Length: 146
Image 1 (cartoon, rainbow, N blue to C red):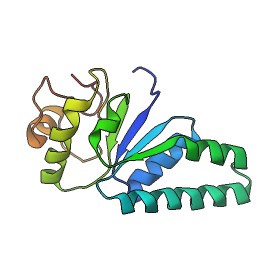
Image 2 (cartoon, rainbow, N blue to C red):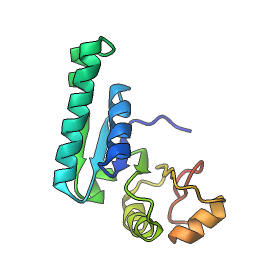
Image 3 (cartoon, one colour):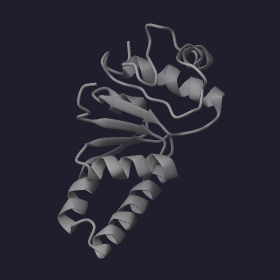
Image 4 (spheres, rainbow, N blue to C red):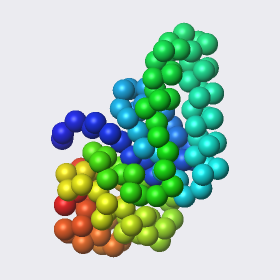
């Protein structure tokens, strides 16, 4: 797998902001997307609070916290993922909503982008079929898109 130079995360809830937090602290620029600006604002506040706690415990320096927070940008539409190397969907466990998310997401991704999924589908082919992805549109799990 190629290096991840920019990560996209769909969903600004607990899982999404946790993924964005860890990636940004690891030095990876992150695009955090949610359809609700309020959710993005809450996620940014949560990440700042959690990183402040890490600073107070001495596990992260204030410079690292500031740099990590600066690596996170927010968006309310998929176009922000155009140059991401990987996009992680962390928005919902609802399969019908996942289908809509992937149908809208896949056309904007670059061909070599990776699209892992955390939903416990039993097999790769089943995953594609269940969320409505054609073989040429995007791949999931351990296979690069297109």
